[in-house]
Amino acid sequence: MAIKPRRLDINSRILQFRRTAGAAYHAWNANDPKGILESKDLKNQPQDLEVMAYFGDDVSRSYQIEQWLPVFEELNKTHKVSIISRQFPTTKKLRKLTSLPVNTVYDFFTLTELIDSNNYKVVLYVNNSFTNFQAMAAKRAFHVHLNHGESDKMSMTSRQMYAYDVVAVAGQAAKDRLKNSLIVSDENKEVVIGRPQLDLLQKPLEVISGRKVLVYAPTWEGDQEANNYSSVDVYGQKIIAAMLQVPNATVLYKPHPKVTTSPVLKILKAHKAIVAQLDAANAKDSNAKHTFVMGDPMPVLQVANLLVSDVSAVSIDYLYLKPQGAMLMCDRRSNTTEFAQVAPISKAVTVLTKENINSIEKIITEHIAGKVDRSSYDSMRNYYFGDSKPGSSITRFVAMVDDLIKRRDSRVSQMPTAIN
Picture 1: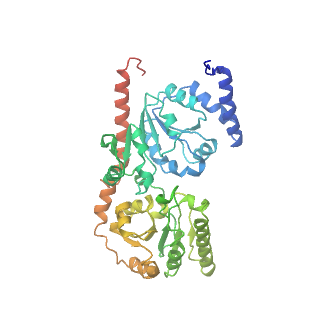
Picture 2: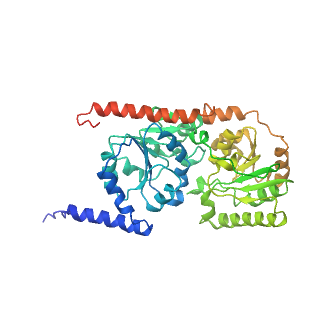
Picture 3: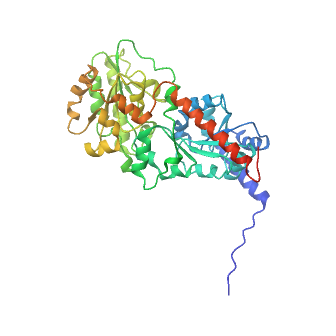
């Protein structure tokens, strides 16, 4: 006897109740009772918006969109922008950081209905979150992958990127990285925009005048061993100890946010030991103001005389911001050939490995004294960012969005069910 498949018949009111109840529960957990009504109000009262900046992750990853906020605010001067978050705590944090409208849309159905009802023309994505693909169900908007930095990490070569209509890249280095890492790439989707965040910098960190500023900015361990470029557990304490020996210097420790909450015991233990080193040094000399710095790295990089970092956006941003500065990079695996392939920027700087880490004091002293070969700095900056004149990146970014809006409107006007 044939077995009939079970019929799934969900009453629309029951479905709506489940969606509302789920949103209410998460809003209550976030101590945001008004949040439950937000998406309903947004959907029922369409606004004159053109661009959505989408962020689907929790507040621990909000740094990924935070660095884009000044850029989105600049874009808002010509094309109205709103930010849609999928989690209430993230929304609450972002509202404190920007004047742009930030709202929570908890469920998939409300999200797609919202995009259609507000007639968004471009949706911007700052990471590779799997929830991005829910927003990408909207058919009448261009979907643009921005990512949240320019680095040589494996995460910058996700195959998912080409699922978007447009892939915004910083420069030729990013284009080469994609071409060399993926069996299929699509240059037709790539648009070079530079690094717009670096054109809209916040005020530099206040430091003591007359003191050298030495910055150690390690990255986290990544989500898999192959993507682990962190030096915290292998070189971190030696680097800090050497920096603290430099006369008349202030040491700033600026780790990746995820270092401070790492589930890897060695990473967390090393991080705490470094903080203890700074505390001990300050106890001996309170005027030094050695500091464990949280938040945006840009104010720190602007004042750094020397940067020691890993494979991350920090090292590349520093090359852009301070071509007159001195930089060291850390290779945790001490494989110089592989390291140069992974991070082309390392060819322009001194690389720390297990072979030379015991000479770290001498290396730092020489770099502070100006014994730095900067002959390839300019060519490397151009390789990563293209035109690096101040203001050029934000101009290219706005121009990209402007072009997409015009193309979208033209295409929609030609469709059988055109909307305006």
